[in-house]
Length: 174
Image 1: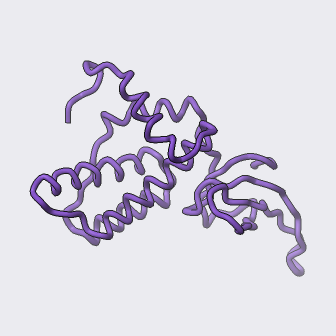
Image 2: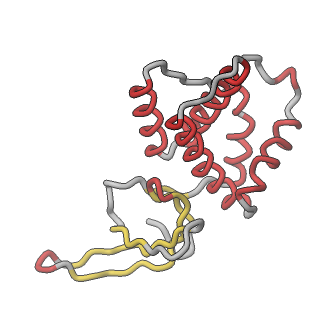
């Protein structure tokens, strides 16, 4: 169970802070406990989520140490390009909903590399892929920013700084 002031990931909403835990009557069925959540990067929104909610993914945000481990593993992270656009979209959406940061990094790396390859031959990415990349980056960067107590705009420079400290011999080529 989360505590008041904890930062959590709540579904696709992203980073939220638990501001209260309330108990409410729910008819003849007794009482139910709710988390009162305030999304960190969205204004004017309050969410009441049942404490025992199994329908929406809720988990604590990653720690500073986990951020650094995640970044260190980025160069070796595999890509998951799927030629069929519908299958790719479904796979990427499932990865986003899972809240698994390694899967989200796969999405970002995959689309980034595909964008680079297409750009080299004068082609662009589909809007669906661009939107998926933006959603993945937003979700990952906001969580990292909260874990490191920095702004989301500072995440990419932080990642680049960490990756530049990894020796080239320890990074496998793709």
